[in-house]
Image 1: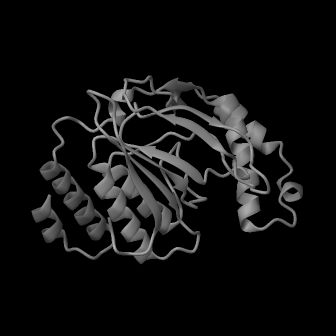
Image 2 (image 1 turned 135 degrees about the vertical axis):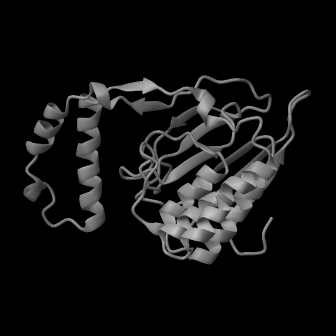
Length: 244
């Protein structure tokens, strides 16, 4: 799909009678991959996402992405999240796949093509969890397993107390930045699970609206780019206002 060097493989899976084909992609993104290769990957994902059904899987090496909040610290990780949002993709992995980090992802532009997602332990000397799932050729409506946090019912007093009990100096002694972050994140998520209830998220918000055609999608992307340019001081206010 693109001449830039990226470690991706794309195949087309023929759908059953009455169902469309599925585009399946497998990707490995090295942790030291540069911006040009990232942009080439995003162009490939954008082209593939215009198919009726897309399933993209692989190790994208974005350690700092918090999928619950759809946020990240690193610039490259934020660009990846923008690609996911711009192409209306849904990330279906819900558990860490390597040492507390969610590196291996499954992305799809519909809920139906992916089912029975399970982590099956590591294979051989690999420190990554194996991810087992089914690609359903006859796409059916599936119930969303996505949940969202209910902060209105949260017990923040207990939350602060649980984190305050941890001897952080001892827990983080001799640890590097990445290990310290993973330890802190683990305790944070444990406290969150105890103190902040969740509720099931409606699947309606995860699908591309029927009225969102290619022309409107292009205008939405143009507006987002103009806003980012204005926030970064690269676009004048008048030019931004004219765009939106």
